[in-house]
Image (cartoon, rainbow, N blue to C red; front, side, top):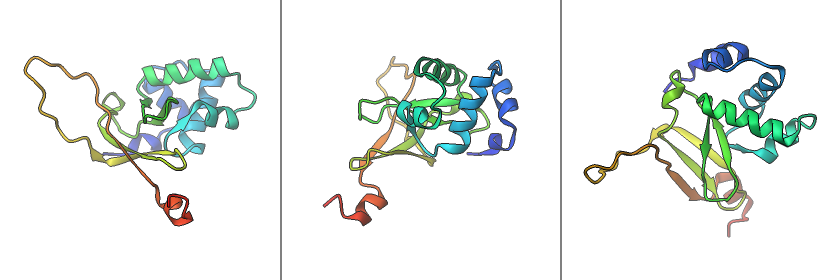
Length: 147
């Protein structure tokens, strides 16, 4: 897997994905690409972009997700989370493992590990797969809050 697409400008990466560049889309994309680390939720984005209303953020996240610049993560927390696709071919962003801490509720992408192949019953066509490993992150283990 390559992080090569992070070498191109924010404007160019939006354009390459077929997203019309607007001031808000560019602001959101820059924020999720360069400021927020790992998986993030709507609240994280709202805290960074206080001047942008929630409905605009929601629509922008949907646009970026539809363009395969972001992918959604269901980590079981009940809150939708997103992560920047870090592949040259963002159409194949799916397929890596996520780690979710049960103490601090952070979710991280483990992009170097692919979801293992699963033998599916004949005739079943898979459309997507999620693989979330739940446990306690190193920061929470070191803080002793998991004990």
